Length: 335
Ligand code: Q9C
Ligand code: ZN
Image (cartoon, rainbow, N blue to C red):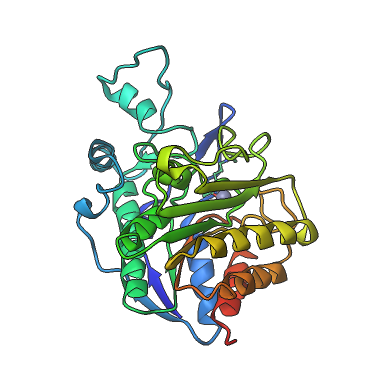
């Protein structure tokens, strides 16, 4: 399987996150990518290539150009080691955005997702990897893996959050949607709010996400099962919120989500893949064993669809690579 790397990922290495008023160590660290790269390198069947660069115009079809410009300019204004966080978020009946502090809150929905000097370069490199994967799938590859960070599935049209700045999986899906219907299956333990948001009114892209119940897990405000789309997109978004479960209770839900994808009859599939539903993940709370990620890969393989897999979360460096390898090896298996 071809693995498309984000060559700029390490430019984004936030010094910390802010949680409940406290500086905490960052979860999305460069070592995540290195751990996955090493695990795949120990196995046969994976080839690695850097994504060729893309122009900013490749992401402004989906993301708000003013938001993308904000990310670029905010990054450009920082020295190494600096990070900017929002302190005030939009409020009132007609919030207006005039100055820097308003921009920070208008374009970001949490305090976990700082902008640093290298953030824009890293995010654009991830988008480039997703675009490259989509083009390879469109050209006839059966399965391609996008190995990138920062993640993307929480990024909405004009807002970063949840460690995500540009929505890599959505960019791949949107690109493929020019050629046929696309399904996005989100297996990260957190709801893919950004992807849902970007396609909420579209019938040509089905979005399905299995995740921790937002009543108790990030991103808290979305991912409930009554969010099903709007306008022409009504019925083309499906959420499967779960309490913290083991593989036994996850499995029937995975089967239901996969069946939903199959019934949609897409030409292409994009998997937003996270390993943070693993039992040992520090923030997910779920209880899946490493081997079960192989079952997930097998379930996706049985759909028989050309598939781009895009890396999202997964924060235990000791198990992350094994989960990714198990998923991809099953996805690529014969038969
Ligand atoms: N300090 C993804 O998995 N919660 N994003 C942080 C711990 C934010 C997860 C709380 C979780 C964001 C792509
Ligand atoms: Zn996650």
